[in-house]
Image (tube, rainbow, N blue to C red; front, side, top):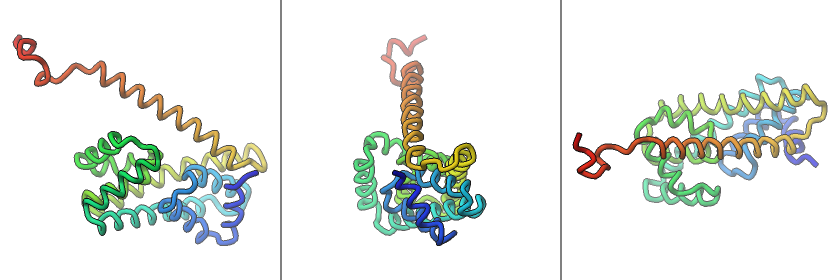
Length: 216
């Protein structure tokens, strides 16, 4: 059974429009993992359903369109309601509120860099446009950074799917997506553990030390 493969087969006759709609809707109604959809699209390209450049441009532009819709929604809602929507979405995705707040603070300090990096982090990539709209991130800078991040994310997973199709005819997109999910979870856990250890080893700021320890 391969539900993702079935979805791609359904979208194939629609060409660019079908892939664009699937990528945009995944942003707004995330009922399927983004990387799973992209891997399935890559497998479809490898099986000759559409050329790789068309597939990549369709899913990337659809992803950016979904980001712009989320950005506009947050900007229209206003700060209080947009923040409530953000926290509700984070709870549904199992994202701790403290981690979401760190991303919000990071956005305040380094908007462009965070807008790009957020598109490479599962779950956060869906909430990042809402954060940008909430904080009033400059539209042009948001669009450029987000587009770059979406292209990198899309190219990586479409490429994986394409390579899988080249190595094994009739590759199961859903099974491959599940394997990738496990790899991503392990990688994210390792990154969080490394960050936690680095924070523990970092010496405390002098202002946080007792008065007697500040005197040379």
